Length: 238
Ligand SMILES: C[S@@+](CC[C@H](N)C(=O)[O-])C[C@H]1O[C@@H](n2cnc3c(N)ncnc32)[C@H](O)[C@@H]1O
Image (cartoon, rainbow, N blue to C red; front, side):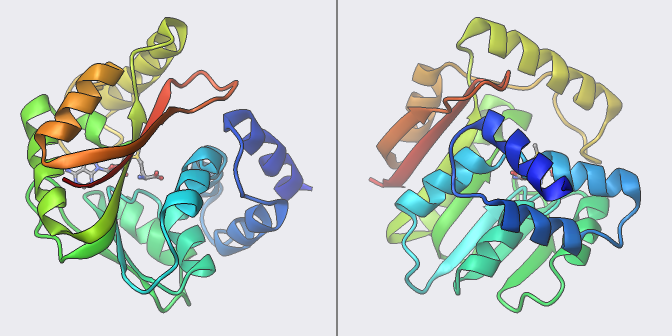
């Protein structure tokens, strides 16, 4: 029943491959957590449809390493590790989030989490790098630094997926901006951050990507009823 509800809610966030069975699996994996932590995991799970869709479409399942920078509760990494054989590494600054991620992903031999600050961490050469809803937490120079570091670490023909929020449509921007400002004010990421999210216009995201030695293979807005102005860039080394 809960799996079905989460699945139906996930469809508000856009089209994607997540099924009711996937939701049930994540519910089972997090059943030993406190109720509030289970809710955190469920809340993240329902946002992932469009991200999983982009990954399925643009990241081949050939052997390689996927790095998930700012991996949070590890829900995305968990779904990827259970459907793919690739080695997956999540890097996350918040120890409480890593602890939740480790608990919900026990028994997945191809998935590990590492504590680290993605603004300074050294990343192994990788075939896929994910930056999902994390770059907006940094000022422009740091965003550029992270993207350039990632570009250097992508293997030839590797793919970087950047998903974040943008500034249009305006009503979604204002809602998402307010929600994130409250989260940042409450200090939910266990690390010093900006006071407001650094959501960029599509042109500014595009320029930042290009200046970081990446080329854009595809770019699309997240089409959904949810009040978040998501944008996804599929990037390769230029
Ligand atoms: C909005 S969450 C997205 C989590 C995950 N990417 C997902 O899609 O479920 C942003 C994450 O980035 C993490 N984060 C923030 N600053 C970071 C840093 N400097 N280094 C590593 N992780 C960071 C936060 O703790 C949080 O878990």
